[in-house]
Image (tube, rainbow, N blue to C red; front, side):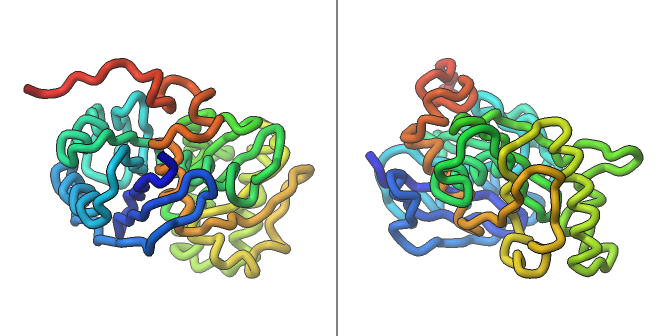
Length: 269
C-alpha cells in the first residue's frame, strides 16, 4: 500500500494528509485542527481520531510527536502535557482509531522526508536536518538510515543552551535581525560540524520559509548548508513513510523505527 495517512502533531495545530510514499507527494489537501490547549493525551487522541475519520483511508497511520519516541512510547514532553512521559502512545492511538498507528519524533520524520524526497535526495554520507522553530529539532541520517532521537537542540555551547539561544523563538524574543540570528546559528552549526562532520546541513522548521533572509549569512566551516524543500509537509510525509515502512531507512533502522521489528504490543482488555 503506497498511499498512507500521515499526521503531524504541532504546538498550535495537528494536521494530516494522505501521502503517496513512493513519490513523497500529498494526494489530497491537508486538513488542520487546532491543538487542544495543554495538549493532554486524551485531547490529542480525539483530534487524531477526527483526522483519521476525515480522510477515511484504510491501513496504517503515521503520527509525529514533539519529543523522544522509543518503541512507540513517548519518553519526553517538553512542550506538551507531562502525562505523555512513559505513555504507550502507539497503543493509545491504535485503540482510538482502529488503525495500526506508528509514532515517530517530529524532527526525525522531517529528516526522513527531506533525505528521501527533499533537499537531501541523492546525498550519501551523513546528513543533518535541523528544524529551527520553538526549539531546535534534529535528525541525523547516514546513507539513508536514520539515527533516531538525537535531540541535538539540547547541546550546550559553553554557557548557552543551544535551542534557547539559537532557535527561531530566541530570534523573536531577543529581537534579532536575520544576520544577527545567523551568527548564533552558525556558531551552533560549526559545533555540530566538529562533532559529526556531516556532508550536508538541511535547515528546516519555521525559518525555512524565509531562507532568502539568512542563506548568505548562515555558514559552516566545511559543510554545505541548504534550506529544506518540503517545508510544512515534511512531518506529514515522514510520518507516512514511517507507517508504510516503504523506505530503506525504516527497514534498516533500529527496532524503535521499524514496525516489523517491534516487540508485540500489549493492549488493554
